[in-house]
Length: 123
Image (cartoon, rainbow, N blue to C red; front, side, top):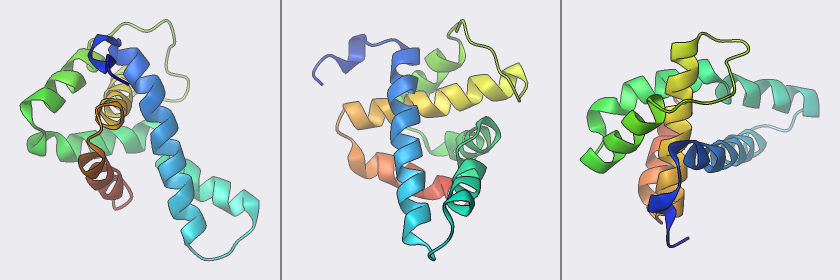
């Protein structure tokens, strides 16, 4: 996408959520063979606001200036959706993590995106 810079942080988060979920599911399937319900349970332990917030907090010191700016804008975005199972701060940080992943994907910075996604699986 050529005009990714024009997308809102929430649009980037929309994309990042899909990329993150697909990455986690692929990693789960690369593990041992299991029942589908167990795959879902394992994937859900990584694909939730708390885990995304923890990942963001761990990688924050390593972010480039442009990445930190995406995170800042996403955390400050106002969404019509509210956190269902988590507090507002956790939800905002999770959205910021997803926006960063979406930004990296759409801007073609796939090595950096994969580096962050791999770190997220180790937290």
